[in-house]
Image (cartoon, rainbow, N blue to C red; front, side, top):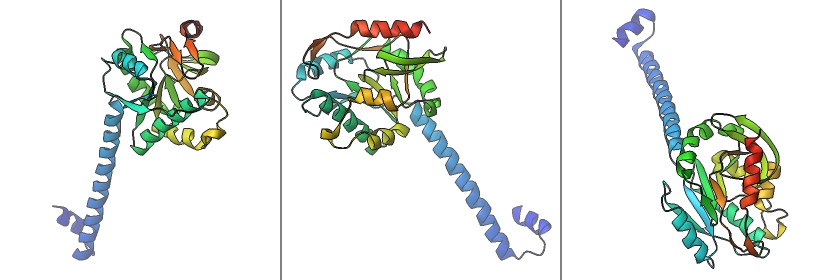
Length: 249
């Protein structure tokens, strides 16, 4: 059918050229098909629950045990990443976060969930998080990091009512969803050598990246002995105040 059609349209074209033209058309069709398949695969990957990593010092198995119990019903396994031990502690914590981001980049994760081992979940947290994932993926060009809960809000504005999404400048990096377009932003701009670190990782994020969060918060921090600030820390009231501030917008 196709050869006859070509002969009618282009009667003076030799059959050798006709074969070449057909090959070109077939090749273009194949490329279009492959592009469509890759696009579909990308969206399929994005719909999956993000790989989850938890930062934990080798010396704090007590916190890891508490974390494991807290996340026993999480939709996907959480991989433990050995935290960097360094004094002051905030530098080791920052290096540990960067270690996770680099791991995600090296593994070509489309996005990654980075957790700290004192992270706690509110009832229904996994369902709330999963319900947000399609919206977060579709709008990933507008944010760099998503937090499951925040403290010390310096700036804030509402992005969406349904779902409730806010852009904030804030602290707390216990529950960080980071997509692949942000990996290089983080790794290329934070000082490479640990001795050169000037700010804790959450301060750096607050000053340089676009942070989104939601309400109600579904991830907070357990009251526990802190290796960074030395002593038992309770951030409950800070989370409550920040959440109320966003609810009032």
